[in-house]
Image (cartoon, rainbow, N blue to C red):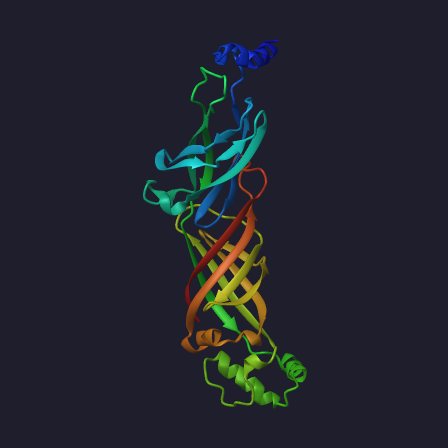
Length: 327
């Protein structure tokens, strides 16, 4: 009945002039936080996901600038974000909007006492969503805006990682693989001299024979190395499989999955055993063998199961780290 009276008042505005329709108790916009969760994590940051639903009772669209948020970690204010996740709600409609917010561990090192002794950090987020009320012809007495506030908490692991590569080795091709590759290439080359050229290149030497350039044939070369992930805090990341993409000296070398993972205290060792084509023996890659050192870049992805209070289903973990190493 009250809604019918309000609609009737709207229709009568043209005849009787502006009316203070707020007095008719018209419904105000509403905002509901439908979801808040830890969306994903890397070795350097965490990403939170927010789902907000706004209902618009008015005959004109509502433009929501977004949510202002203040982040607190272990009781210390980390930073503020203004107007994150803005969107428009259609007239007399409902609109849900998803947006993410990123929190970098680097921003926390200096504001959290005894960071290195912690395994978890308590994060509190104070969010305020302000919805401006538009000017509607014939409507007077409406407020300029309505606001909704949320206080949210979530634990996150304390991470301060170091990534290194150790025990990097590339092995000469087998006689069988080399013989097959030479046949496929159509090159009439002495197999012994060809094998010698491979051994010289992998030893960082100029080949004694110029009978063949190892990058001219397609021979699988076995490679093995270990990615060491150390954490300078007490947090532990447990996972059973890692998808990886590995490059040296700016050249992509191998990609795949490994389950050869072991832990020693705060360190995790991921051993990679794979093969790559000798056609990848570019000048940049060969420099690794001659200089006995180089740069690496490793991108990885997996899923981690945290306690249910953080997230029931596994959380995606991704990282992209680089550095230098020695052979």
